[in-house]
Image (tube, rainbow, N blue to C red; front, side, top):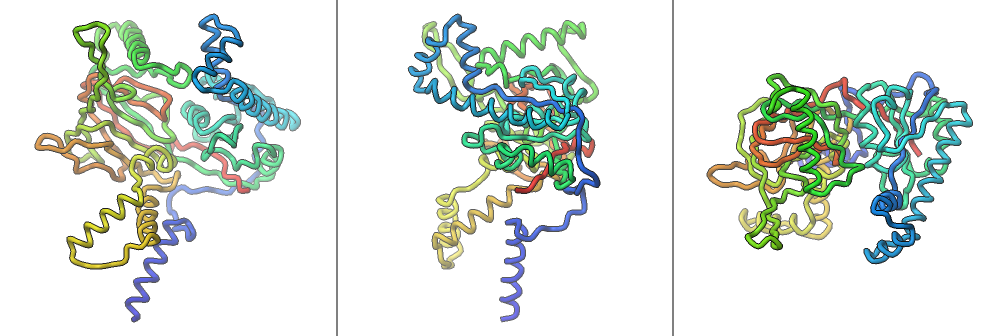
Length: 436
């Protein structure tokens, strides 16, 4: 009886830690209370491009008027008035942020995400991301100084989750958030980020920004060709080659993804010019985890995420559904010749336990890698489908691949390129933890 009770208590304690009801002690970096209030003198506010602005700009370039835009949106099943309404909500919330800052005598500089650059980062004491999680990721990617705070404000809470932003109530009560910051009633949350080194042949460290360009597959290829030619012209060589690892000028807050093209598709034209086939092309590469042996992999791509990103795309790649867990448990019970209750509550509990194991603290230095849809045969192995690591190295054997950082910045990553994915204390992002 005593042993049974001990086992139950151990299970309960582990459960409490994993669900966050009982927090484990951290010996590394952690959220810290500020010693004094935070009162920046200069703040840059980086605002997102709304869907209304994007559509408007796109059709204006085509020489169409506003009435044409309304009709074309209607043909696509989109509502002009709905997009305009969301745009106005975002704009009003940005104005609320600006007025709140200016009333406190803070110098403010407002920039669109397309105008956001290193000069803006240098000018500001702090940066406010006015949009959703995507805008926050873009803002964070250019902040290389770990002492420069970044604060996210969700400007359209009804349409955006905003995991990386302040609690939703502060969207409409931003002066209250500023008051708490000035009084020191908050905690610093130091989010670990990924740094990337590239080396080998055919390397082009010039990024292609996907946020503003909204590139199609062919445009993306063309953009990489242009930046590659520029790089070759500057270096005076036909093929760029770096014998020493080159540190890329971005940091990843969520994840990096490596795979063939943007959509992992290959394009082949048939003999008849009007026939075009789009076929799936697997990504071929080699991977080494924590300086271990290289292993050949063929899959639909590789993802490496931080603790911040463990709640995002990586989570959705690896999470299990109740149906899958139930089917596996039934097979396990049958193979083991045992019986145990497969109630709905039990299945949901096991599913939740597994899915929660995929999520870890944004402050932890470790990374989580995922081989998406691995191919396993006598040539290619899938023994390393997912797991935690301190460093992941990838050697490309791809034809037309990209390394995409936080879904917004793309680097060419073809045969001969080697990427080293790791973290550093110097790359931590200083963010604010403000309770409701």
